[in-house]
Image (tube, rainbow, N blue to C red; front, top):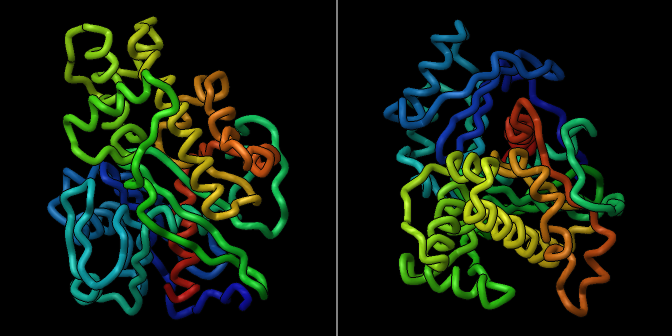
Length: 327
């Protein structure tokens, strides 16, 4: 199955990458045209996705699109979408009618990110350790933001790629030593099931910091994720401890996803947190945790890991490709 040629009757098209905090939009005028009119909106500032789309079109001075392709932080399994880490909910068929669209594609946001990986440029990627990708092998995508996204990208026999989406961010988090076990026990007391997302996300970074303060016998503070990062940069040992935990857990989860998918084509780390922690990730246990899978360590050692740092979300291009694939 070859990669489909974009259908002219789906242009102009509107593209959207919708996470738990922000909604990113871009516009494409015609097949082969570059993305333009890129804009970011905070989800909390708009009552619905339809309202955010209308605001975008009005503010950018754009006409009604023929098609809309959306990558959204939710497992798409039917007509109803109710965001796990956001307030928006909608009917896919109802949104298509409301916006007067000829075509509407809605997929998971990390499936969209996965589809955008082949278009990334070298300058948008930062390596975490050595490794060389196997051409034509599956790729893995993982990333922490408001939540934790996980996806894969599988090669098609006749050329092109197909996304594999899931909810791997809600897989159970495991510790590697006594201190990590104690941190997870604190999280279990708060949440019951401790998913990877409880640690590997913006709120998760705060959870780790608060667990560390409890274990260190310090007052527990209510902070924003950016404040934890700022405290670490200012020399706060507990904040640095939380970030070290974050990096180690991320390495372990990235290794788990890679083993699950057989992703010898490489691992790509998206989301908004990893680019801010690039220095910390490189000096942390991330790579040793990624490779440290016992008898399968040799399988992981040659696989490259990259942090994605792109000014425009690659999930927008990925959403456009999903529309062409008929997803």
